[in-house]
Image (cartoon, rainbow over all chains, first blue to last red; front, side, top):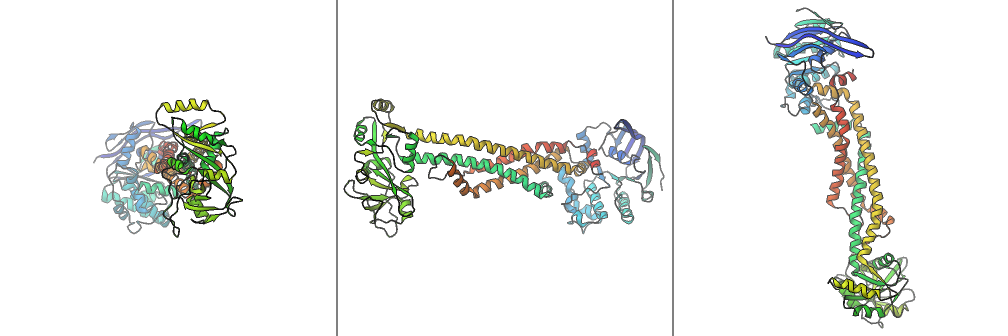
Length: 225
Length: 398
């Protein structure tokens, strides 16, 4: 099976006042296409930093990163933006929906913002995440779980091959959080979507196909259920 | 959809957006009103000068602008020339036409203010104003006639506007101050100029009833069109004393020049309004960008390029300014009457024609100027949004 994400000796250091913070220390991670990997770790372990580097939102200070077989370590900004738009979908802890737009319009947003992208079918994606009857509701009229589903549909509407989820259940109650992870698992199983989801909840992480754990910027390979 | 997104973003802070739109509207209104006034005033002055019919006026020495103003708007002259000069000027070979005029003012009926009686020699006066004719369209009135050209018959013709304002009819004998009764023999067709508001009377009759024997306010002249006529005229005039030559077109130009000095002030005000509006726009959109930094970061994570965000913010600015430009222009169009009234109270000479002339091209310039303001004013906030690093932007929302 092809490798979706591969990092070798990935490092990230940054200055914080007078001291240097080592957020990532030599991360070696290989995720194959179609895998669902849970990234476990406590707050400050480096989960978000790793996801943002993999999602081409940030650059490593050391090591290499390859996505779908392409070395993207030193991509310029424009190329990174293009690749991110066509390959990577993001879901954040904050839903970050535009409050004035309906669910349908929020999901259509990536195509709206990127005129070069072929219009996807936001309607179908909202149905896929179970919101076929909430198309014209604004975020204020939706529950937290429904808003995250809209955010998920928005991340998937461009048909990305990788989905990066940064604590997607952080603001949800336990039952809704399980529903979201069930949905991720379903997308992985039925659509073959490669997913890397950060969470600090071990019970949720157990739904993933594989778990890896970050501790103080270093990777501890976890288990395969 | 992008426009809808723009519109929704602007609606997030309606009061702030409205204030910004109001600022742009004010600047656009000032600019449009300024240009409308400039065009309208020039046209109105040119019309008044043309309505006078004279290229040159011979008058008693004095301020040429005051004399020209009295001649264009009505009123009485304080100084006179001798009417024998009419024969002298008529005899000059370079003079093509000459006509005398004697301006006198009397109290009108009730509170109608002052009436100007323009003493003319009908035949020569009509050569200067070939379009002057009697109205054929006055309900209930018999067809009028021109007064007899003699000092012995007290007959007059009324301007159309004066007839309408006073209700005087053909055949009526009007009594003005201590003057003998004056019979109205006709009413002029509307001219759109000075003649609408005056009483035309034979100049000799005017000399008699106002007890100004041998006196004239001035003589209107038209020179022959050959190039040597002006030089010959200047040579002849130089030899004459006790008169003043007024070039009416030059007076018109001077009046417009005087207004141009006011225009510079208005232009400065419009520029300041534009600058304030531009700063207001930059401030509003900048704040909007700062408030939405996390959202813009998410947009970047969704694949929006720097150019996409630039376009989004820029379009918000342009829409704000375009709406402001349209509102300001509409405001000026609807408030044209009030602007006209204010301008009339400010300018040194207010012609009869409308002073504020709205032309499609200048209305377009008002809106286009506002949009241009948006193009320029939007650059900084749009650049700010485009320069956001997605990571930092998203972190701001944490």
